[in-house]
Length: 143
Image 1 (cartoon, rainbow, N blue to C red):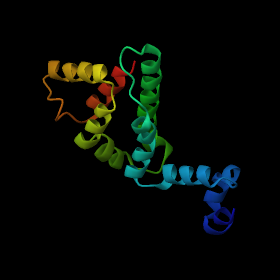
Image 2: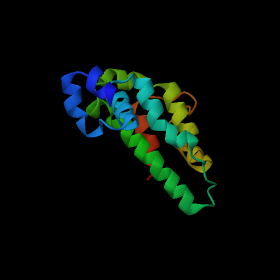
Image 3: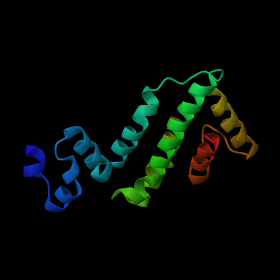
């Protein structure tokens, strides 16, 4: 592929040699490794956003959805250790109120209600809660 041969630094070429024949794989890798944090987060959430949230009565479908949700949370958590994105940038983006609200909108209605109730019991307003404990709490809903 011409892009791989002509436009990448030698160090990046070595890291991406196994994907030099697939533009999709190469683009995905480069965005995840060197992209803006907002692009990386949007890429991770894209699968959840496009997935149909199953009703709580569809137990198997709900479990599959929540597994996808849990995997997305793990990928989000791993951003600072698996990319060149700084932990500070990660905290500013992923732990922000706006992003936390985006995540909670992707919970199933019953899980969102359970999570909101948990926050209220802790004395937090679900529409204003942000930070690492809240992010971890969302992960707890998936288990």
